Length: 116
Length: 115
Image 1 (cartoon, one colour):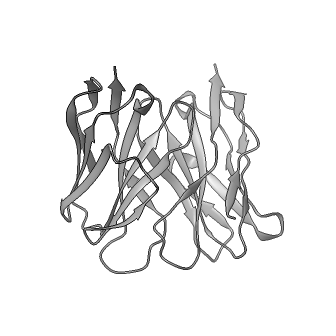
Image 2: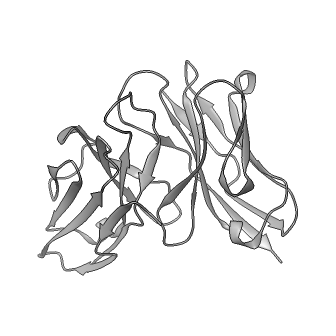
């Protein structure tokens, strides 16, 4: 069982819609991540939140807007997406509140997004 | 620049046969090294990790990996493959120092298991 929970598992949206992806973890992890993954490709880092502050934005288009309301929750707000944004969006968390970043990530099962 | 290379895009093995998936990295110092597995339509699961110490590390599901500094490699092995091992396997590295929060993935190897 995964300890990182993502909702919804599947989402279909039009290019004018506004939707959100949600992620939740209860492991006390200090960092949370959004990755985008296309079929047969490795995950691509989008955003990193550390201690609820945005620490890394990998030059992601503004139609993707992350939000970290508290240490357990991570949202990804979607607006005016393009068909090429269709992908599996993975949330991950890492490390307990003490200690340096070690790169060990705990992934959710992902949200499969289709943009029509 | 740091990079990870998985030379084999696709590997097919028979059930019960041994498996080795290759991974080479490029980094100035010894990074933290990982193997993740992804079943179709699922998220990634950590198989094993190397931070320091013993260069042969044991992971879940009967997998092991050996870190070879001289070859900049971290190959994944399993003595006897099961049909349920069919999945995508990603090697990944993180800097051994610093705190960037970034993980660099290889392109992945698709493992197919024949009955």
